[in-house]
Length: 400
Ligand SMILES: [Zn+2]
Image 1 (cartoon, rainbow, N blue to C red):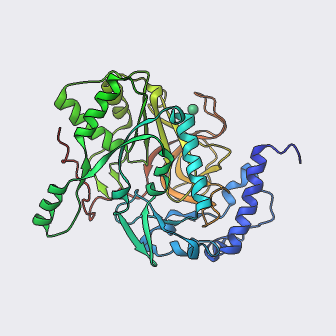
Image 2: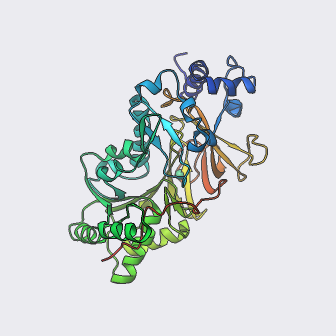
Image 3: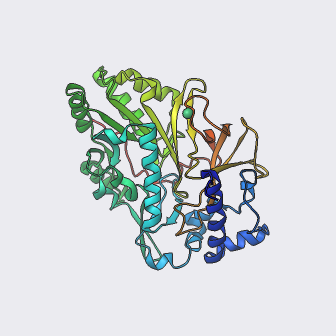
């Protein structure tokens, strides 16, 4: 017993967490009973697919089941809900207590440190709003506010010099109110701040990370490039972290109306900043699970390869029609995230997502040597919804 390998430890912890979740969450207990799950069976890598999972739909606001996914007395102690920014109009809602939020943050940190240079870089350009705006974008469910997941994790950048590029545009907001009779905020990128910051970073060779939705970066920087006809030489000290998906043309309650091909994005950024492919990091994460999968660019696949950190958890990939686990590589399926850590507050031990992925290797990454499964994200089962969404954000606000 003294020589338990970490994989055995994760599987042991999983067994316990499944049992305890079934004990203090009625909804999960029902899922277990439906499939007559044997709680005493020894979990193996080959039997992870038998774990009762929660499908993504259970977390959707419209299904009103998310409160039932909380464990024990979580609801009484809950400060606020976390809301996904991934689905337009019908977000996922997750309740988490501090202890679970800390695990989620640690997982994101692990990705940013391992696949990028978070630890050593003190300057940031975030294509994101600051807390004043985040605190204004909220819903309320069962008497508790719901904020974007981002609110809970923005403090992982605490102590750094952060340039928040998303801002309110007052004039546009008033214009919208006048033209549509709706009090709708217009948020956009602060172009002047972006421009001056990039110049400062280039001139003083300041190590800098630029991060968040690739769609924002792509569109705004393309406009900049075309207008200024200027590239930067930021080689050696400029890193780009993309995350939150957004490759499929929608981001949160934002309808951007076009797609960005990952390869096109990479090429554009390399040209514009004179950086190499090793400066890119992609982070795959979902509001419904605390796991975070780091990715680097692969020339071979012309795509980001995402890595499952075996200390965090495991994945299962399910056939889109039958939902049976797929054991082979190179076959499309739905991604399920499985972890015993960071899910003490809600039934998140195994969550089936609507992301369509393909595992390229179950053991390790042949390119960087990291242990654990590697996969690529190739689509989404739920069509990205644009219709019926209020256009809360505007990209036209970009002016230099
Ligand atoms: Zn790799």
